[in-house]
Image (tube, rainbow, N blue to C red; front, side, top):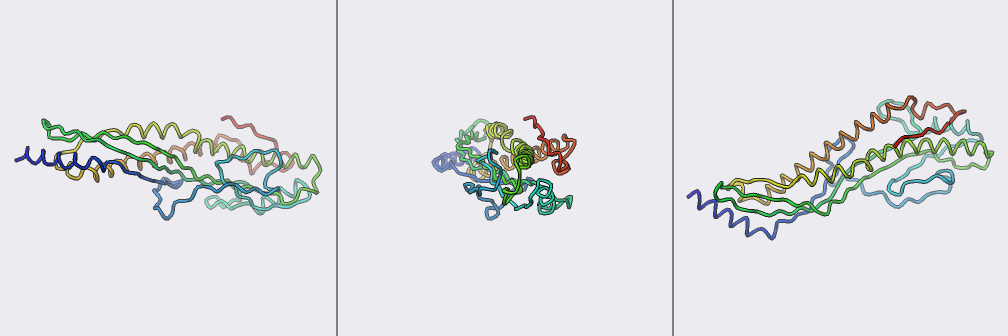
Length: 259
């Protein structure tokens, strides 16, 4: 009777083999929480830069969405003061920051599986293949934008350019941690999701059980990856003796970031 039930279950799951491919999409906020579909952010739109967004010659990343808040002044010191007065407020520290960033992480992938009955041990062996993994990073950096630099002399323009360059070096250093340093690790962890053994009873609902298992495993990867990123970001920030907002306006020296 038990053998008959096992054989019957195997016939059912093998008959459904043509349905054994699915697509899954998951997105996580910067705390590692899985976002419901309606809360997921859209990928950044193509950047429409205004002529005064950043000083000429500064390169921006095409995979980052940049937002700007206006600052004013006829001298470099006045512009920095305007930055301090108009910059975004950090919700945790209640301090203003000249540059902020936000991010979330997500992916879409397909998975398929094959089933191999093991009559001797009354199990069904399930081998997985995850394919088409597409990583999605929603990255936003907020910067000050000088609305009019016509009153600045060449030296002050260079000071302002150095100030923005320093902000971007730190911001892009964070983006490197969030995105560039994590891609290979995510791909590696996904490749390790490869096998699950089902009992003969579980085999009757193989497709649902396998999809739930794959979703759970990749959700764990997302939570763990976000946690690791946050730890690296904290170390990155604490490694600097001075945060960028404490640099005096009269000496906006460019800080070299080791990447």
